[in-house]
Length: 198
Image (cartoon, rainbow, N blue to C red; front, side, top):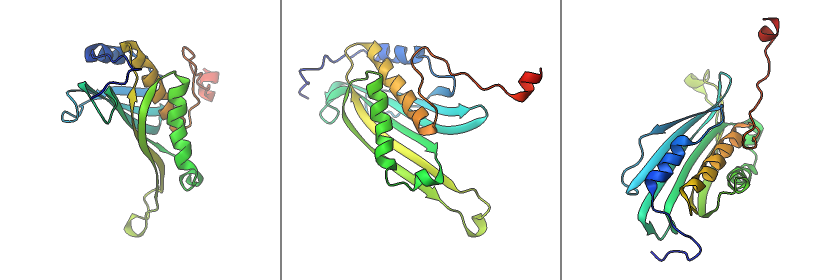
């Protein structure tokens, strides 16, 4: 591979893993490590997130961090991030022809707003509309959006991964209809009537 002269590649995967382990996630996200693929790259780390608002599950996502010290021509770097985001949407949105470009903008806007530098972005946005019938007629309708994407993060320091993690978090929240929050700001939860009577 011919390195991009504008990128000072880092090769310390252990330090990046450590930054991932220390990352502070929004309270609406339950993030856990899951088994990572072993045949794509020498080093890999996989995360799974469930997005909730109270007791309601709004969506899910996965993020895989791949690392090949030798680099990759297709990646144009030594790291590659691969994500899948899935969220339920309104029926009108599921059939909207603008859903695909909007979903793509969720990702790019999220990364850009967090200052996460990247290149070689690729992906697909899919609208899933399911209407059960016959013996499945009692099953609920399904309307969801799925975004699958990958990109090469430009990391000059292990700490640079934080912007990509925050961008991925914002992507999931955008897809699930949760407002983005500036760093260090906590979302206030609405009070319930039973709390007011306590």
